[in-house]
Length: 301
Image (cartoon, rainbow, N blue to C red; front, top):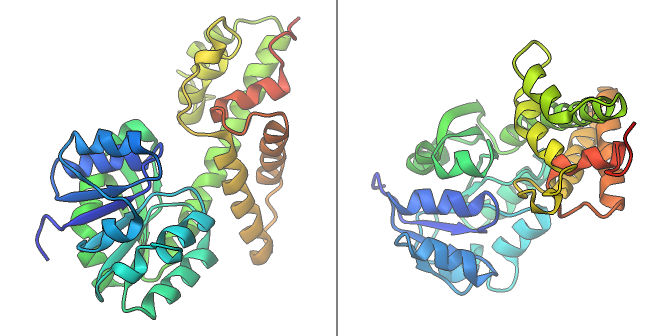
């Protein structure tokens, strides 16, 4: 395979769009999304647009999926006008979505029946890092499949960890990552809520504590947006990671932990908080908005 493999990107959401734009600067890229606007943005970077997943994948050597959940994976690959039926034998699918180990294994088995390969490669880092090729990518794949996908993965990742040799291994490590991320966001929300309850300015608290032992990446990253939720600019908080993504991901975490008979009391509590946020109508808001469940905007000392 060429060092610049012909690549299809299916799904141009918060992560898929910046990944596709970054890839399009180095590789021949064809993109598909149900929305026209993100397709046009990547086309401006030199990519070709496709009307269906099948059209996007037809001539690709690597097909990168960046969709929300397993239902969308199934639709993109195996649904009407799905990519799998259009791909040539030996084509590799790179699954960047967080869907859980069992879903990845089942997808790999369905693809294998068609002579297609799967690289289980969930990503972490957020849209800005995706656009800079600075992602953390954890991989579970056979060596032959990984070798085919390596140029694309190297273009997107600053840290690439091969955790195992089969699909599902990457998803397992990503679940551990999401456990930590989800709990850290929930803890940050509790800290900001308590600060408000004590009459402290959230912005000052976040600036101060981010510099010390109590700080974390999530506190420093989500904290300012949590503070913004209480300002006059609350409606302008940028949606970088939807809250319902953590409803999905924490559900995966607690589900596989139950199967493994590993108790996760903190992750379970965090999952309930995200479910409360979803029930409160925050599903499509930035996940930092979870702080308003604990401390509503009008409630302060």
